[in-house]
Image (cartoon, rainbow, N blue to C red; front, side):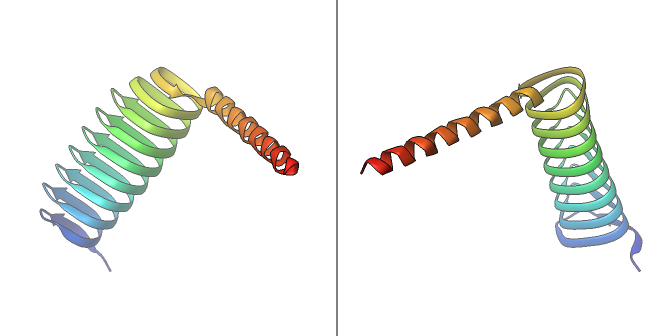
Length: 163
């Protein structure tokens, strides 16, 4: 049976516990119900609830993720909230970004306040966002890429028949 609570202040390999608190340290892999990171980080987190303040995670799979002044590279969650932070790639049912950014965001509902997103694929978008590529533009870009590739293949076949 796992420990009810585990405190960590320095680097360790794997942490398994119900509750993991990391302050000014990190872990390679964490498996827990609740993970709280303050001024630290982790490579991989599998948890129900994750809270990160002034820290980060490379890969997280969880139900809820809250980041304040930190970031995550790749996240799969039910609910993601980021305040003054960033996400690389995120997939979730609901994402809230407040004065934050994301590279690629895939979600059912996006609640955005002063957010910057590279590629936004969302069913519902609420708030202010600066998107490089939103859902309609992504579909148009995919269509244009498909047509362009198809034309290149047709031209290539025509040219190869001439020889």
